[in-house]
Length: 232
Image 1 (tube, rainbow, N blue to C red):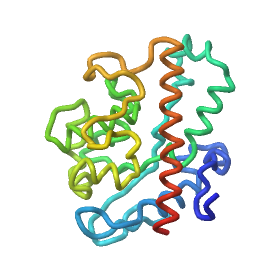
Image 2 (image 1 turned 45 degrees about the vertical axis):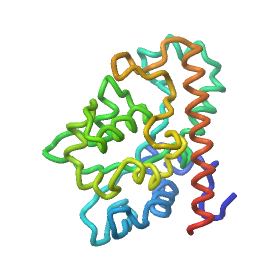
Image 3 (image 1 turned 90 degrees about the horizontal axis):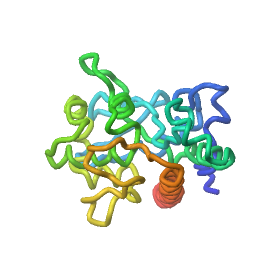
């Protein structure tokens, strides 16, 4: 275990029963450690204890967001979840609450519209899937249409920090969700150009989705440790 980051730490354990994104001091400390660094456009993000940038590159207010979803609490998905071993669901949840399953997005509302995290959660073509969110971000940088473009346009200053999709991916250590050329997403579940419901439709499909998500989180956790060992 790295003495600065424990990739096995479940952020629910120090959240006093609240939402780990806002209540876990360990999670906030890890975010500050990981994302307070040079940005591709020049300058440096420096995050304070509230995850607000305090450097001179601009006013940016960030919030922690889980990027791993089991869908186990969704009533309309109960018919799938109830057929999956509860221990497998709990294992999935626990891994999702490690640092590999967490990311930051701007939390400030612009013109009283949805934030990025709100939009990706509410949009029926995304339904909180980070792989589909990244497809939208890829299209945004390529000036292509996606279900989240209108929201992303409001946060242009944030996306401009990273210059392009490859640099965004590298900054947030998300390389295990793209191919070597950074031009295709490694989807957790087959993708049909946002034309179909993005949730798995059977137990087998769900188990494959779960396996793919967990593989990604494990790889990202290791990537995070490697980065910290080299840079902190």
